[in-house]
Length: 235
Ligand SMILES: C[S@@+](CC[C@H](N)C(=O)[O-])C[C@H]1O[C@@H](n2cnc3c(N)ncnc32)[C@H](O)[C@@H]1O
Image (cartoon, rainbow, N blue to C red; front, side, top):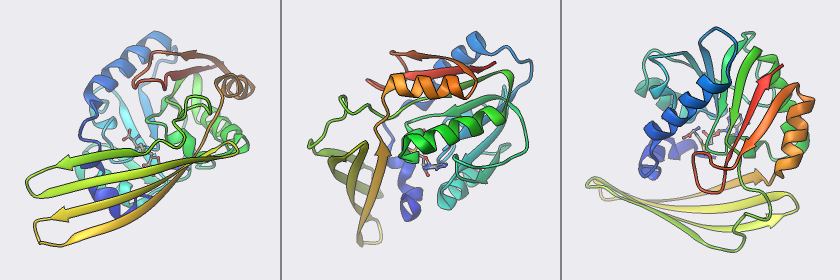
């Protein structure tokens, strides 16, 4: 997943307002966090697009499973420690004040079993009074099964067209993404990237959060349309 596409990631998501999203997150941290430190961990941090807006106020660490994404983040965002690791079982041996898991990265754990392990792992990396903010993927009923998707980027030196199909198997959404990328050198590259994300129901997620020791709630109005946000405070 992503791999050779990591260097195009920021172009593909050029439409996303990371700065505004970071401001919303910052306000939520102020509202919910009761621990007194400023250590922040962004899980599934990608190319570090959110974290770059947090590094002035927080001591930031980013973690992502994908080596190529971590490499892009390291070259782009200074003053932040980026590590490669799987959110299900990473072990940093640090307790943070804030853990973020944004833009539906949590969906990639695919199963409820892994979701539980991941949330337990987050608890183990959070101080008492520390806050967890998770932006989920879609629930099964909200997922646009069968509807094709298209994203384009029309730059001077790079042009990208990404088309995808969608299907559902059990509690898993599967998106086959086809990329056509044209660059200045005259070549056109074609990549196929398969994304599989678990379709987790909100009540079940809240139940698992409570089990993982979070006082938790779901906010319907979050960062992106129809995704919302889960907030958990480690008790
Ligand atoms: C949609 S991107 C979001 C990236 C970033 N948070 C953003 O907002 O741009 C999902 C990210 O989750 C990462 N990811 C997927 N599975 C993961 C796992 N098990 N542990 C850690 N990161 C994971 C991917 O490599 C990818 O960078």
